[in-house]
Length: 455
Image (cartoon, rainbow, N blue to C red; front, side):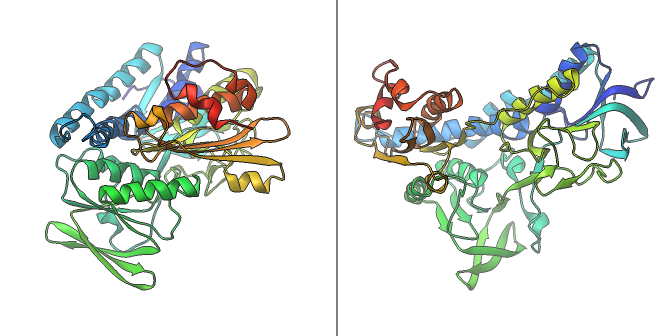
């Protein structure tokens, strides 16, 4: 712990993830005195227990899937995942992050504290035996798994635990049909596990296009993943070295044995230990209630950014960065910047990948705009046929009045690239005609854009 002789600071930051680090460092560079607090190893979830290590594992699963797609088309045999070697490789991306983050704070002159932070009053934070006073306070504590209120909930693993598994159980059950369950289920299945996903209704990945979700589910079922829709888990019990899940499926008793049960039923703002009431900080289920400048509506000296913020932004790392930049500007320049959330892409890193940006078809139809929906099966197109990429689908939503792109939804092995082209167009107001007129390298997924944007 870096002890401060003076416990009064211009800024106190709660959380050392991407948002907290960014604001703390930027304000310190402008001469502010800054303290930062975290009860966990410094560096945040994304870099150590989330997006980054997950993508390392997903990348290996993707290679296996791509290899299988070309079996009999020039590839003689499939590859296989060595779980222990893959986990060792993953560790090379995360080891040393807490130490390097602490060193960065040292060099910047940021006072850091390990411990659980809580408000003592509107401008004071208690951490361990220290009480710190801040002219301004930033809450950037991220998110945590939502409480499910089921018997035996403490037996559930979570995404962090999955990313640190030394051995892969033979059977794994994921509770919840969100992107965490889909991504980890695909990784586990490609590594040879028997995988189940349990979801409370028949609409998983509810923020994504339902037609493309249906195609993804079919592909994952073909891989061997079992989906239990309209199913709820009511009880988790130990059984030998594994677990038994009990509940209801379509109103009938449901029972499943597994070696590991993983919480994949969503995350919520991490505010439970903050004593927000003592700080006069209003919050609801979406997070800290903020105005358009990301300032607390009830305490003008408090800001929030990232997953803990109740802003309109999605709980994604790029949004944490966007909000951090806005908060920094608003602290230094007295509320001058409103974050621009236009065209936020979201990607499910399964294989095929599912990506989305902008309006869904349903939202576009409800908007009252006159729209054109291009639903395209690209499986037979050269770009995707050459790598056996099937299914390969896209749904593009256009505004007939001006040719603007309202939404884009892609399911294939190149979705992470394609969605970024659409994001650029939507964020900067490029029309379908302008994108179609753009010269992309050939043959690539970019050179196919004009066929997806036909008016």
